[in-house]
Image 1 (tube, rainbow, N blue to C red):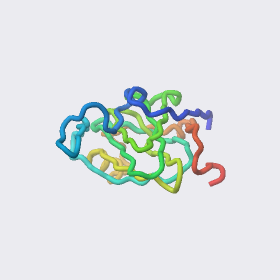
Image 2 (cartoon, helix red, strand yellow):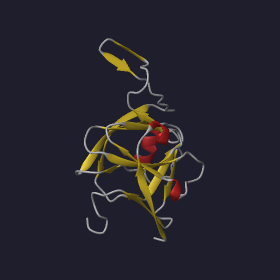
Image 3 (spheres, rainbow, N blue to C red):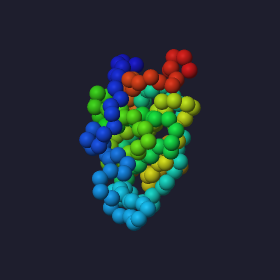
Image 4 (cartoon, rainbow, N blue to C red):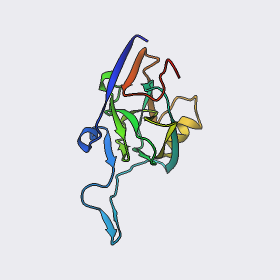
Length: 182
């Protein structure tokens, strides 16, 4: 590696997360409902059929190697109980962000929905235990392109590999696994 960049974990607030998307948590006046429940409508957008998945992120060193941005879908991640987990994001842009532009946030009960084009680490990083489970909402064409057609250059997603470019991005939080002593 040519250089190492450390990024701190920032508190997750609607204002701090606004450049990257929105927090998925009941807030403000409800959009609908009736006696016994309230509904807050979220602006999910996909150009193809939505895909709802359960994703398990395993404990790993707090090192971000690869980031991506999706061009045709907002993407939502909602923790399913379990330990807090850290996500890493950068504002939407045509070119990959500078490492110093990355921001880390702790998800502890609330979820997030990325704006279309928001750069984000492909992983989430559990802070305790062997894994963190998430409800993950994306779209079929984007997911299929990345997994069913792995090895082909993606058209719906832009991917950038910081590690291959010689930069190590370290999340400045206590990792579950020390990369030098797993």
